[in-house]
Length: 227
Image (cartoon, rainbow, N blue to C red; front, top):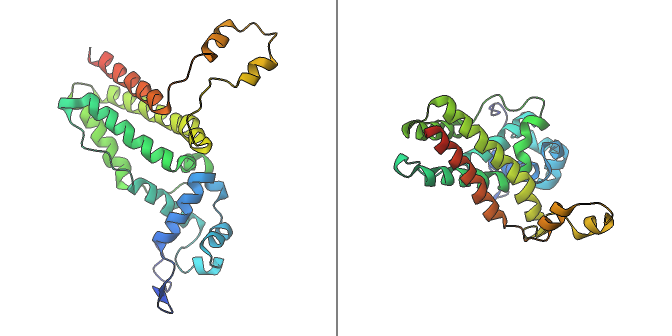
């Protein structure tokens, strides 16, 4: 909950100082890159160039900071309109919006694993966007259980993709170009690995191409339910 009983000066000597929005942005930056365990009040204060005491003029405690960061992340999630007439494109657009959200702050997605008590309240986008996706699939003829299964499948695929493909590619500055490093196969030249060696010789699709394959798999799942 926002702290309402503490004084929060807007300026100091004519210059802007801390706000809850600034704290949220820095906290989410840290959590997105390093995970929520790296988000301590001391580290946050150091990153902002203030004292820990100064932070407490704006937030109640660390849990308040976690809530602010998660709230900011979800407020940034804005899928395009979803239309039953072009449902396949809408599913792809929805998946793309999730991917953009996830790869912007990949490690922040693990808040439910990193935090013993994740934020008790939830941003409206978490509910509204899920409802819109389920409504899209319901409108094209899926029952709610099948629609929910498709959404669960899509969410898990995009989450794992962001963590295992997009994030390593971002760290390396480019898509990974090999299935396994050549040195791995060279170090184990005595192993009989004909299928793996053949596969390793092929160029990997780009991250975007792999993501398109992922989306097509979910679309195929939905088509099979419709059939």
